[in-house]
Structure formats: C-alpha cells, structure tokens
Image (cartoon, rainbow, N blue to C red; front, side, top):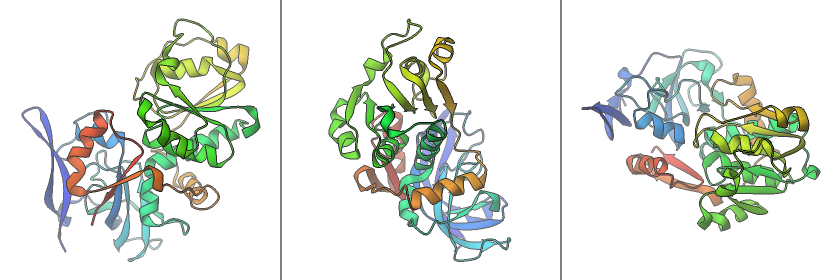
Length: 328
C-alpha cells in the first residue's frame, strides 16, 4: 500500500486549515524505519502545530502528531525488524518531520523504542508524551528528596493530559494530591483519579505581589507556567521542589530569590522532547511495570476524521484527560 490517510495542515491566505487527505509513502522524509501507525494521541503541542504556531512547526503543508505507536514495515537497521511493535514520542516528530497523525511515518532509528512488554500499543498512546512527562516530573521530584509522608503535593492544570496522569501516578504512589483546576465541574473526575483536595485555580493566582506565601506544598508538578508557577514556588514548604513542564498560562513570571535562599526550595525543569532515548526507555519501563496505571477513567478515543474538531476543543481549553487517536 503506497497511499495512506493523514491529517494535513495547509496555509491558505494566512489561515491554517486542517483536513484528512490521501498521501503517498514516497512523499515521506528519508529515514531508517517505516512504521505503520496504529495509535497516536492529541497533545496541546499538536494543536499549536495545527494552528500554525511557528515556534512548533515552521514548514507547511505539514502533518502534526508528536506521538506514535505502531508496527515496523521496513527497516535499514539491525536493531529493528519488520513486525516489531514500537513507540515514538518527541524529538522532531510532528514538529517539522511528518508526525503521528498519518497512518505511516518514516523516522530515524534513534527516535524509536520497542514497545515495553507491560503495555499494549493502545495503552502506550493513552500515556504518550503526557505520560512520559508526568513520569519524568515525579522521578525528578523523588530524586530531589520528595517522600509521601512530607505532605501534600500540588498538581496544576490537573484536568489536562500531563496533569491528570500526574494526579493518578502520585496518588498510586501514596502521595496526598491536591489538584488545581479552573474547571470546577471536573472535581469528581479528579477525585476518581485520586486527588484528595481540589484547589480553584484563582487561589493560586492570589498574592503575586508578595515575595513569599504561606508554606503549603511539599512538592508540585506545574503544567501551566506563568505567574502561577512562581506562586507555587513561593508556597513550597522548606526544602520542597516544583517540577515545571508547561506554559499554557504563559512563558514568563515575576520572580525573586527569597524562596530559594530562605526556604531552600528547588525549581526543576522538565523536558520530555529531547531526552536521551535511554532515559525515555527507563521511564517507559517504569510506566509498564511498577508505575502502571489504570487509565480507563481519563481516556477519550477518536478517529483520524475527528481530529480537526478535537484540535479546536483543546485550543479552546475544553479537553479533559487524554485523547487517544485510533489510526485504523
């Protein structure tokens, strides 16, 4: 089969239009491995790519999709064989290299992981970049000394992809999770994921003018950035840490040194895109065994044809949990 379906984003008179069209395998970029994609997932970054954000994707027409799981159809490297089930997240996939919203991709072997035994292809894409990012956050917090008995751990943007998985993962590991959201109607959803406390997002926006806030959190996973991030830093308990992995609320904040030098706190940066493959592999192994989660509560499955409407939903702040894309 040389023809396949893909979501293609085109620039038309200054506007960016998404549509499902037929493409040819010969049109894919050069690479070591040809993969028939069975599942992908929808992330905020994919929606930015589809809306023409040049900080994500510079060249159009373009197929987004930073996540993909499927079966090797052709390989020029010994490590990967035809029939291997594989997963990919990040690197340049779906940014300037045609991504997982196509039924076929061709990529460098250095981006590709064999599917962990404890996860199906479907389960791996319910997690996707969001699950990998959440795992990296929790791992880095624990490396910085976080323990369940130290007190509540805050998750901002808790109804989003990274946030919802972080709530579930932290709860499964025995942490007392406080879930912050601007969607009060989703409190039951967050409680079912394991949150013990629901925090209104507006409470995290108060006190921006103060150099320090009352100590509340033993640790935090921040998925939103902006002024909320530094308010979280200012409210960490002595020696606490916040893992920063997103910027939906903005890329800048007004900061000061006082929380760092008076409370010994840590601001930890998390990148899930360019992590060495060996680091990604170790996180996927944990997510497939000791950190394996029941994610049925937070997944919404769609088809390739549904993607344009779902992209509008995520850009409008209406997506909850994870959106799995069945590429069949």
